[in-house]
Length: 461
Image (cartoon, rainbow, N blue to C red; front, side):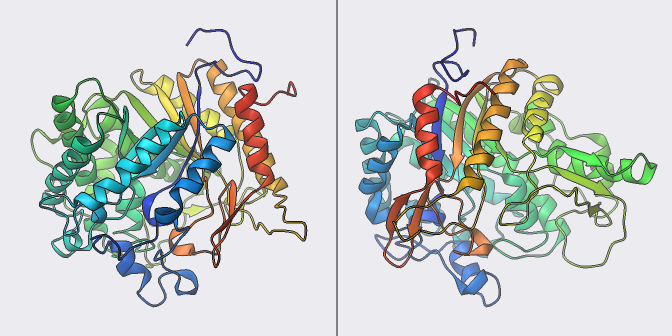
């Protein structure tokens, strides 16, 4: 991208956007033929979600999408990243698509295009139809095939209007939080299930990309991962090995098969010590490594690790259960994540140096803080403004370092159902009063609108 940069230092064709996901914002879980998802089941299980919250109503985006389109237009967004609810399209996870469910997304896409906003579709953001989980879920190889069928149904309805397609959002979280630690739906705690799920998610991605390219080769396909920079707490060999193992599980387990066409040998050795790897089959690696037009990167934090002792409790780290995560004394977000914008540059530069060239988009960048509407009706979220400003500047430094970065999507457009945290944590640029669904721009929304207008922060830092 060699064009002259805009006033704010980003390329003039840089794509500024915001993101949401279906279960977190839509609500309307019982309407228009939608079937139950694993998150409907999980959130109704006592003790799984803070305060017993569910996504039944969420931000009511299903009914208020026109209002939300107006907010996007007011912000000046060039793109909106959203996900399709699989159980809205196939209530049982298979079979003939539900025309009413498809029609909702057709209306949404048409509305975006009327506003000059580019739709960026994610096919899977964690809301697996419960009927497929009942048949084995992602640990079952057949779920990959069902995903391809679903992807083809959505693509057939929207491909004439949507150019950018993301297959999966954060497959690591789906596999290791959903089937390993049980923190997320479906709440299973089984190392073997988690490892199988990770592989079948990657397989689903690769098979879907290859199938959809045969339908329309002009479409653009990607997958979104959430790599973290991983550092050892000391030079001690045990800590260095802890960092190797966590980096292997968190980053290379996904990036290597996606971009290099193979799993890293050391990671397979680590896993083979704790689970069988009999789910790997000839031809899988080639299927997974379908060529990408863009790699989505979600960035939230850095991990600093040390060797410790396995306490025997639930863990998303098979082969690394002994590892402990070390506090660096940095400021934290409301969910307890330490803030480190330099890690974003580190992740992006690593992708450029360690893997074949592929354009990158930051598909999620955001933070939760304890936001409140004041007596004058304003939301002064100064901490989020500082967070976003520091990270947007980090993204600019990555471009200056040679990273082919095409766009950035703030997470999230709206306050929403924050998974196991329920409604207790707010990530949005727009404050949502959940009882009334009233929307209010936070100061961060006004800040972002100015960044979009000027093509980046403009004070010269």
